[in-house]
Amino acid sequence: MSIIKMVLVVRMDIGMGQGKIASQCAHAAVECFTKARRGFLSYFTARAWLMMGQPKIVLKVQTEKEFLRLYETAQKSGLVTAAIRDAGRTQLKPGTITVLGIGPGATEKIDEITSHLRLL
Image (cartoon, rainbow, N blue to C red; front, side, top):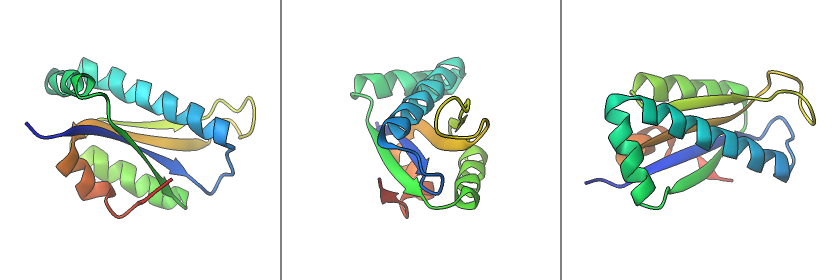
């Protein structure tokens, strides 16, 4: 069995504070897990991820363009994805895309898409 993980990709070009980043990452993790539990095959991946301690890696991108390219690539590869849009109640304008969740999924498959990114 391969290692299962989730990656959270944070946009750095929108000036979120640390607390906002943490909150948006939490939204992405919950949304990805919820989506994974709904799918037939991803359900078993989600259960394995839970049993492995729910590994999550937080990475960063510098632009919305790079963010959207990753999102599209992850979707095309069949991975569970969640692009989080802020409600606009605090720091950001409503609808601002903040964090991309990818997974839970096989580490090898996720790394094909995200291994070039730097840790937050």
